[in-house]
Amino acid sequence: MNSSTTVSAELGLRLVVPDHTTVPLLAGLEYAADDPYAIRMSFYVGDDEPVEWIFARELLTVGIVRKVGDGDVEVWPAGPQDDDTLNIALSSPFGDALFEAPLSPLAEFLHRTYQAVPAGQESDHIDIDRELEHLLWQS
Image (cartoon, rainbow, N blue to C red; front, top):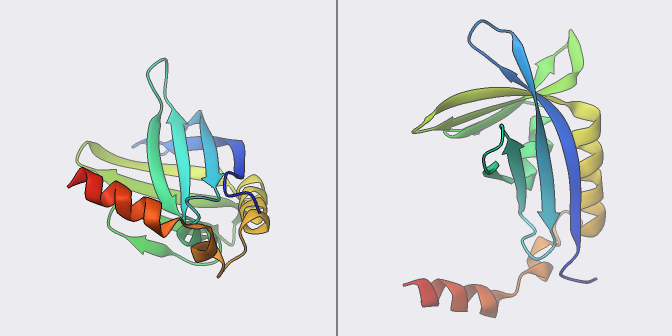
């Protein structure tokens, strides 16, 4: 397996605003085998640079079936009336946001990440020496 393997996708989300209407926006998803526990999600909000959040792959996976997360990120299925939507709530010092994500394309993206790096094999794709060097260089 090539440790530079990446999986990417674009996902149409809906931002839920305070009056419970939604605003469509585009998000880019990226998974890299050399960072096997993380998924990067870039939100495109106008002409500015995208806003990037990093999620644990497992958090998004578990969030498909039940509410998970604590603090800055929570993920949960929309419910029995809407079985094709996943809720993603983000919190930061700059504010809170609730997104509705279509479940099918997100699940397909996650499936492709598990084809690239199967669950339980993530540690086989981490270059510990490089990570330690990076940590030590920053201190």
